[in-house]
Image (cartoon, rainbow, N blue to C red; front, side, top):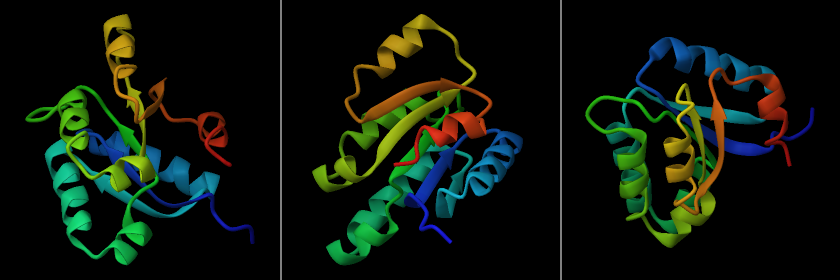
Length: 137
C-alpha cells in the first residue's frame, strides 16, 4: 500500500455532521492515517499549543500538515483562529498548511483569507474527493 501523503490532517468545524462527512471523504482518499477533529476553533488552537509544549522531535510527528478550517463558528471564528495561529512558533506555521473550507461565498472572506500567508487554499463545502486529490503530493 502506498504511504499516505500526510501524517495528520485536522478538521475544524462547529457542525459535527460536516466534520463526519469530511472525515469520511479524507478516509476514502487515503491521504492520511490520522484525522484530528475539533468542533471549535478555540479547542483546536489549544491542541496546537499543547503540541508545541512537547519536545521538538515529538512535535514533528504529531502536528497536522493540513488543517481544514471553517469560517463561521461561535466563540472563535475561522479568522480569529488564523490570528491566534499567527502567534504559534515558526516551525508550527511552516508545518501546517491551512485550507479554508467554508460555505461562505463572500468575496470579502476570500480576500481576507489571502492576507494570511499560511492559508493555502479557499474551497467551498462540501469537501470532495476531487478537491482532496489536489492535496496529494
